Amino acid sequence: MRAVVLTTSYPVSDEDPSGHFVRSSAEALARGGAEVHVIAAGGSVLDPPSRDGRLVVHRAGGGALFSWPGAVARARESPLRLLSAAPFAAAVLDRLREIGPVDRAVAHWIIPCAWPLLLALPRTPLEVHAHGADVRLLLGAPRAARAAVVGALLRRDARFVFAARALRDALACTLAPAQARALELASRVEPSVFDLPPVAERAAAIRSEIVQIPGERLAVVACRLIPTKRVELAIEAARAAGPGLRLVVIGDGPERAALERLASRGDLAAEGSRGAGTTAAGEGRAAVRFTGALPRREALAWIGAADVLLHPSSHEAAPTVIREARALGVPVIACDAGDVVAWARSDDGILVADGTARSLAAALRSVRSRRSDRAPATAR
Image 1: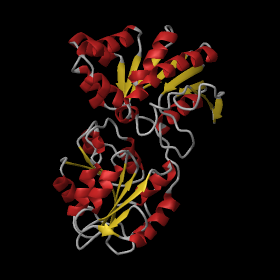
Image 2: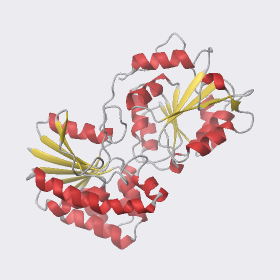
Image 3: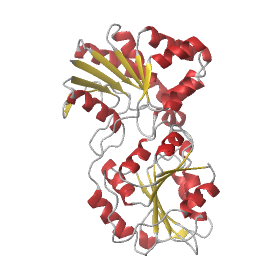
Image 4: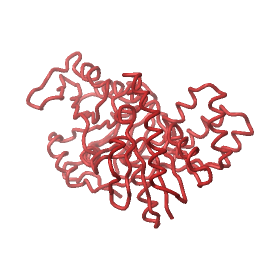
């Protein structure tokens, strides 16, 4: 069987966190015996196909729009970047012609990836994965446009895979009853696949370096630093949680400068001995450290070293970072978004707090430090 996977997010290396779940999904197809071609944003349309393990990767340009920290954030920063969407779509059609006939087509994100496959492969079985941002774009579109997009895919007999039940429900409730029912029948809910590299040794080294006082706790936030992630709530909560807590913010984005100013406000003063990007606590205050963007394995090691992952995001579907933390045995404090509440019902390692600094701080106070002689969590 030959399959093509179309995505606007795909890692350029093993340590690139972008689209790693897309790669994992494509690799699962390949392990099942398929010859898998991935068409991904980035690079140049002149780049020849390259091998990524079992996968053949074809780059289609469009990196001006479809790259970190996400198309929406990049378009807001510079609306002219939207102009790269049309050349990307044209390059995708060229790549599809070069690849030739396929037996299966997979689109990650309804918008924009389903449309080139819809046009170029009218008789090939089509599976469309909805991850979150694409559904939110549809929800923000006029009702007629939203119905037209969903209707075209349903008429094509596309199968939908939603990363979270909350995503499917949010989209279905805006459609006419008959179309909503058809969408439900043509879809399933399945969180994105991910692979977890071994990080226990590095996590132990990080913890021994950072946590040096008995009883001290380490909280980690790992995300893009954009408004919907609400990292400011994590900083405010850490400062209100009392002494004995360190907060590490992993990631980068347009909000970083403002967040660093927030972390440095009041009685938080620079502490040069702890390195750039770190603010130190005054009496009873949490120390906050910004690491910037890290390679995926290193970011996972920081999570594995932590006593808790703090995830105050307001817009989520099935956040992979929460699932990664739980796979590492690390407790999570999160806010109600996507399927997080449903997960918490069956996993007492996930605590859902109200979206306020006070509620998050109360949850942080309940977190206990791992004993110093206990190794950091490992994958299970």
